[in-house]
Image (cartoon, rainbow, N blue to C red):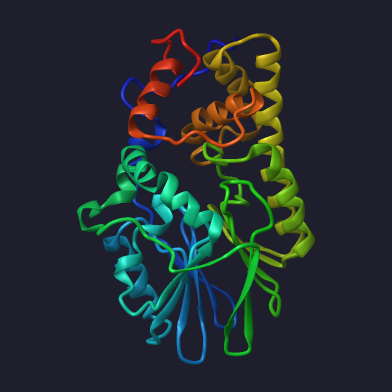
Length: 332
């Protein structure tokens, strides 16, 4: 193995040492349609209608969500009536309580199931993984629970504009929703698509994800807000981001499968995946953070674990120990 391959530091994954603050920027994507875009923190968005605003994801804490609301107020003073969740991870949804005018929180049934199954464990795990993103964590009143759910698709109308909420298949989670605006061909993909940022697959259905990305590609968006990274503008740029996300996941699966076929354990599969992926993807933001979780999930899935195992703070620590060679066992 490459002697230059590094393993996570003794007390944390890469994200725990990430202290550089990012100031999201409002980007107009089409008339009345806006992205709230960071360098590589989770992106959000909002759509302004005749008398209200629809929000797409909320930021990690009420404190950070109030900054989001203040920036929305630079565009409009209309109330935020609906919140749409692209999926459920604490870094995207736990700022919801800052939007006191919201009448409903909308998500897929798969996302609601996810909240019930692993929402609290996810919260406790993510606070440890991303300390910078949970400024004001003590204000969070509890989990963000959807109040309106749908199975595969629903339309939300903002005046004459349709927001088509679609579950195109499993991928980043079991309940991913993309928000498609057919009139202006703008797509909010959530973390189904990333733009040159590490692709988190720790809670994923990696084998299904490629087909879900094919369904995203079939929409032929002309503007795409990825889960992380800059807005994609133009059909070619959108298609490239979809392709790169697919390539990242295919390389992950192929390298871990090669390790399993060679009867290697989790740590050796991690080293193999890092060696295979570093040359092409290693300079992407959050790559070093996501890779241990991605390899762990790929290792489980390829060995027959259909549904992602719930991450807890304890399981995070066990994974760190395995990847540092402190445990011989390959089961976390």
